[in-house]
Image 1 (spheres, rainbow, N blue to C red):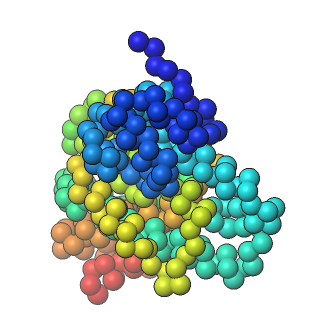
Image 2: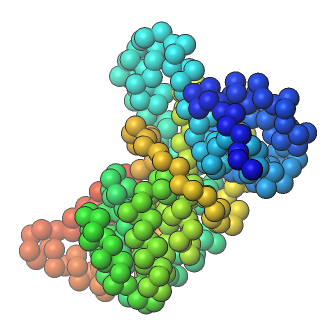
Amino acid sequence: METRRYVERQNILDSIKKNAPYLNPALRQIADYVVENPERCTTLAINDLAAACGVAASTVTRFVREIGLKSYQELKITIAQALTTANHSQARPDERRVYEAITRADPVATIIEKVAFREAEALTESKCLLNVGQVERAVAVIAKADSLVFCCLGSSGIAAEEATWRFMQAGKKCLLFRDQASQLAAAALLSPEDAAIAISYSGRTEPVVEALRMARGRGAHTIAITSFEDSPLVKHADIALFTPAASPARDLDREAPASGQVDAKHREELGGRAGAESRALPQREVPRKPAGRALGTLTAQLFVVESLYASLMAGQGDAMASFIEETCASGERTGIGVPSAPGLLRRSVEAVMGA
């Protein structure tokens, strides 16, 4: 039976509200919850929304299809877009956001405060989301791998460069190509003794997804760093490490607390997701072209990279100490020194080794 197309994408909340009376009781319960809690729905995993509505996850999937969307991820994106459009159209020209929560009317001092708050919030959210068991598994894979190949595109390459430098410091053979064809070629050459690490905020960047798929097909271990557990990238990952998914609606309407801390309710929601097993839900890919990298996204990716590197050093530090010392000594002899890695989260080699 062909899916009924209830939804007008630019006005999804009004469409859901208008058509709720025609849905069966279970689907109407979901519709009512979405209309009453649109901002919260942009951050909830499908199982969390199901629990909040007292229905099964499969019922949420049926609701999504009933209103004419292809996937739960598309529902969250469309709600966020609708909220953003509504808030933007109602604001005065000087109050309209030019970048997340930043407006044209904001003085530089306020902009600095907002950026600092969002970066600190990203770290707190990342800590809540990062699954310790998954990190331990990833560290074990990295420690045993003969070589590491990184797959990325665009600004996710900054985190990949940081990871490449970090793990090379630890004596691991690393490959990072910015060219998409080279990434695919490198993935095709991997073996079961190697590992591929893909970094993608959306988890829907086709070249990155394809590279990880090819690496897994060659028997290599695969690790994904992404923000969406139902993304295609996770489907091809043995281990998935999640970063916070930016919510345009939340960022637009939320003022930073004076203390610079994330509110307890939001932290509790994130903490509830941290223990969930990584999984991939079959779905068709939803085209998405974000206007720009969200505040805190790079910080979150670097936090994951730093956590992996520090954990690796804690467990393998003695075995890698001589390699790091030799690298540092060689740099000093040539006058080059040990180059500083890019990124916001760096420690010196001496600090990591406890010197």
